[in-house]
Image (cartoon, rainbow, N blue to C red):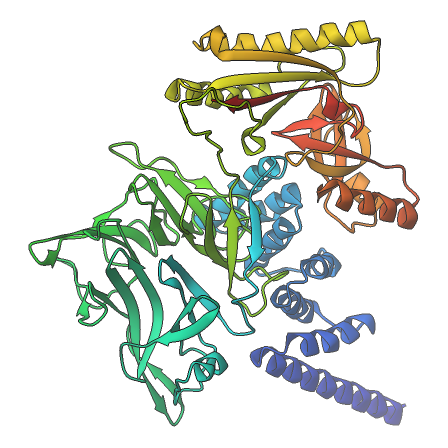
Length: 612
């Protein structure tokens, strides 16, 4: 019996040593950022029943670093309920759920974290973000975002600055540096350089010697600023000095930016000049701010930069605000922040200046923002196109990539002295949808119509056109009457807001069979009920493969998955029917109005557009 006990003891000892060696190996792989290899070991341990809660948490960490948030969520769900987790895991679990679009479940985990850490600022922001995302995800976006694939490489590309002399940007691409005929003795990936792309050719801009690392560069109307670090190759690795901001008006003589009454030893970075070069916006951690990094400005007078002015609590938070960009008229600020409600990490926000204060910032929403870091927003040659930087994991090539954006252009027909030709301006066309055989305007369209009325008052030379439609069901005489009433209903809205009826042209247009429009976001509806809160129920019907959202129309709650074009949703509909044998159909949404089908609902509408 004693010999058997010794045998069992030896087996347990060997198993314990193996587990210890396995844990050491996993930790070593994680330290070396070899997350997929570490995950493979941990997955085998869990599958064989040899993993404890600590190893499951390590696996979650690997999945998060690999951007596999679905598996991270599933692994959190496998941890026994009685396990006492470190309270920070409730926060991370909430973040994973938020990234997966499960906002109500995320709020529960954030709530558990707040029980342990009452009043935590970031957790409160995350909860408010979940509420905002439930709303934002139902709103259509007509912004186009693309990866600038002609620029991006497996290296880092940052700080896009479009100018008349081409596009400046920063990259640590040593091969590109070599191809431009330059060189560097620094192989460390943290050392970056300023590149200039013009007419398809790339050159390097290096005003200093090879011991300078360029971390930011901006230029505007003859004024330039950059942030640099002194670097050295040491035996145990790269030495980096403190960041220093420099400015110049000729790109030859560079002076250190040191505003009046600013203590030494604090970081000042992310510069942006105003259009006339007499003011510079920047991010800093100097004392007296609201958070970790605040946005300030300093004015130039009598050969000196004045004491920095904090942009105030409407912009700055206890979190990080950085990467300011001011428009040419100085009335619109774009910046990055993790302290306002958003999609996750840094998001891009905008704020308008109203004479005294900056308005509360507005999230630029998807597709500009993502669950990654999004920052460095800047317009190009007009107010419709530009660039920003993101490390969104789905489409980025090498970590931080440069992306382009395009807003829909406002078309103004020039005054030629002749009678203007009547043209529809598709980019400006607003839509109002109606219930079957009705012409009352739903409250979800009130804000949109109010903004159009304000625009009409600012531009008295414009005429408003209202084309109304009915779906193909019903007698022609009935549809004609409905169309007239829908057009009249919209026209009366504007006259009630003080718009002269002579400036409004109604066009009752009869039956429409058009079921696809660029302004509509399409979905695949997988269920409906008079009850709310059934997301989990319908998620199970598709094996939790995709997040399920809901919208309300009338007394019913409609549950759907997917956001995209008609073509994308037709494919998703086919896939869901084939894989899960469920009944589903294509629906849509516009301005938080839910279109319960894609055949009839889009055709009960009024189209509103301007002509001159």
